[in-house]
Length: 294
Image (cartoon, rainbow, N blue to C red; front, top):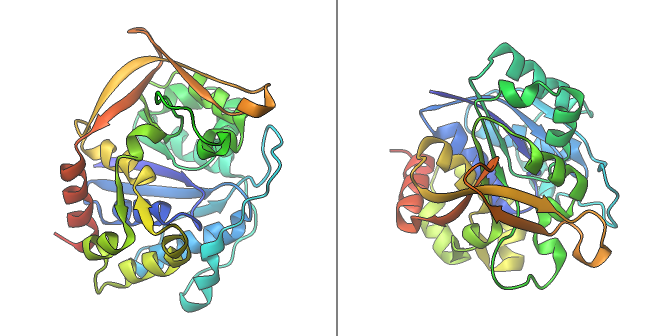
């Protein structure tokens, strides 16, 4: 059994919701709590709560930071939150997400895996406010960064770094005992058409109905589903699903046109392991079997 904390910007891209659904259904996961990050964190917390309730579970949730350590020109909103009127959920006010994360980590030293699948503001603030949190973690798993050979069309494609470059730099610089990174060029390989997604994941359970209700807007507008965030979660329980390379990561925090861009420097003594490849078919089998029920 793995003790897990999830930090997420759930409420937009459907893969956050699928990631949460997987953690709720994974028999080896003890989900200690959820924190939300990015714009309108209260609504994001309500979406997370609605999905937990649809799964028949009560999980502690804290609405976290909706401002960034380094200003950016947008305020992201959770477009999927429009579905909240169709699902039971609590209402939330902003809380102290870093303090909540630290409390759980402190209560379970060397046992907690922190999964970050949104912008890095909550996690970076945790590490700044409570420096011992890094060494008290069992593992840090984040969906962040781009290290592909082709330039991105826009810097914001690397969203989790672009949305708070300074926070990204702080997190990439941290030296957790296990620090695994799942970058865009690897998660992009886990892309399927929306119709295929429905055949793989849609079931008759309230959980999956909720996931696709909250993610409907995203699926309609994009026409596809990319499993960016679920890969970080699945890798906690199936550590050989990806091949990793160790090294260091730097983040651009000064040049406007390249803000948030990430660079990987291979080094066997590095503080991070970045995923280089994933077993795609096995990944989808594991994810689908867990979410739809074994």
